[in-house]
Length: 227
Ligand SMILES: C[S@@+](CC[C@H](N)C(=O)[O-])C[C@H]1O[C@@H](n2cnc3c(N)ncnc32)[C@H](O)[C@@H]1O
Image: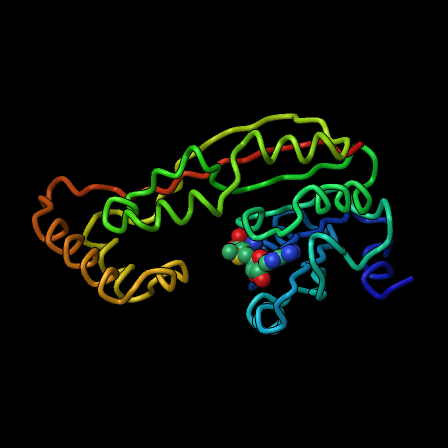
């Protein structure tokens, strides 16, 4: 039995795995919200894992190197698996779905948080339209994701869509994008980035202060039951 398995099996507590945990924000949040659950955060990136261990350490969270296609834990171990903003990174989604059906107990839950291809309507794309084209190639559709999971024996419980607030105004959004550009901007040229940023800045300056435009991002949440 591996150390992650021993950690999860302690006291028979509810067990959660986050696939593609990144810097561990959701792992530590779930450990707090769902105490006394055990949480294992899996990610292939060693720099991400060391940052997670540093900024999102928690006594009931363990961070382990691995991928969705090869989860380095035993079988039937987890009650809940979370995949947040990771489904579009997976090179072999159907294989990952089969692997999740292995590590979850029968009747366990998988939650996929993403933006399905057909709902890529973020404000960002108004200023950087080429990012929409690139994201359309990267993000799978609802039907593609559900087909891979039902193909692995999962049943679909719910699929919902919601808008998550990002900034209270266009001005705030402009400050946010210019000070902390998202990694997706590395796909476009510096000229394209500055061109879009200039148009965003002009719109932000013209925004009536009494009527700011709240900026939201769309997320889809698919909840599935393991076979
Ligand atoms: C956008 S981050 C999401 C982090 C976190 N889940 C969140 O929602 O804030 C995507 C993460 O997926 C990881 N990732 C990439 N390929 C993966 C794979 N094949 N299996 C599991 N994780 C993967 C990356 O290393 C990265 O940390």
